[in-house]
Amino acid sequence: MATQNITVLARPRPINKLEKKLGGQNCISVSSSRQFSVDNSGEIQNFTFDHVFKPEAKQEEVFNVTIQPLVADALNGINHAIMAYGQTSS
Image (cartoon, rainbow, N blue to C red):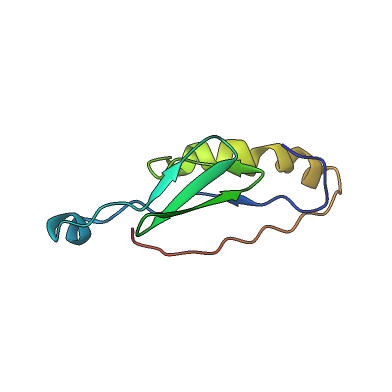
């Protein structure tokens, strides 16, 4: 993970059962481990982060990549702040 002061990670939300039932399609595609693309009616926009997880990534994978490396630091007195933002129940 990066050694800068702020690290930004993203995990796009997968489409849910209702969206699938209604014929919805995911407009977000993960291009690499650092970038995802949004298709807005044919207009593609790329977004770059320190790390991008695939929508189907499990919580354990996200924890192991993002939080686990900080635990030893925290136990040694190094301060960290973690913010999570986004939809739940998806």
